[in-house]
Length: 291
Image (cartoon, rainbow, N blue to C red; front, side, top):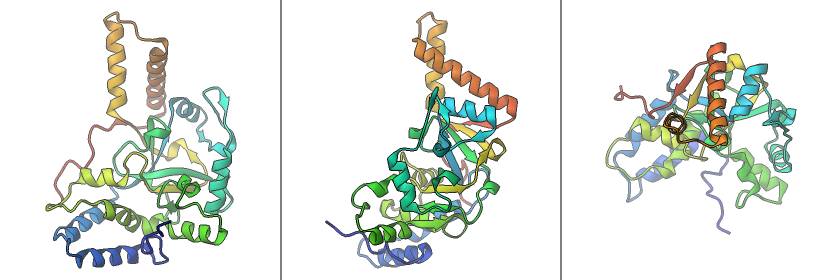
């Protein structure tokens, strides 16, 4: 088996890993004069605290979101929430991963999310993206370089407890100290050898693309007042508009489609009633030139 990259999975701090990677890349024959500038732009974007700065996001389905809005208390899987009429419990895989992560107090005391800029999160986990208030995510909030379920798959899965612990330790970080460098280190191998400066939209896509993300382990509960806004993909809005138009034109949608539309209307009504922000994300990026 090919060994893991000794720099990426090494014992150096994230800032030192970035510095070493940059030094190696700039001395390589394929070096691009735009690398340093692009990394500066990435860091500039990640250090912003405005509305398009980094956020912890949690994706959630409509049933779970309606339950959350009704109770004001977001329940993780260890609390055995009822979602879609069924009581959910942690899988053996979830328990195994949380054991490997060695979270203080265990997985029951933590709530998982991802780092995003202005996108709509990891939609695999739900169509609604909850952006958490920046003040709620403290500097010591734990980060993990990737989806922690990867620890159960080769080449990260290791039967040797010591080696498994070393891998987990190498991929950990904290929001305050490591966020920018963790994300930069994650982006560097994926940066194309471009001959121009990259855009804010490209950076947003590199921070979170499909299920490629930095995981956030937030300790303690998430309450409705911790939600900065609910983000929605324009794809879902377009599908809803198509279903509604078909109904208006007497082209009967299915019962499943109508139930989905009605559920979305209930979500919007609840968000409006509780004063929770709701936004359809129609583009990625800041919408203006770098300053």
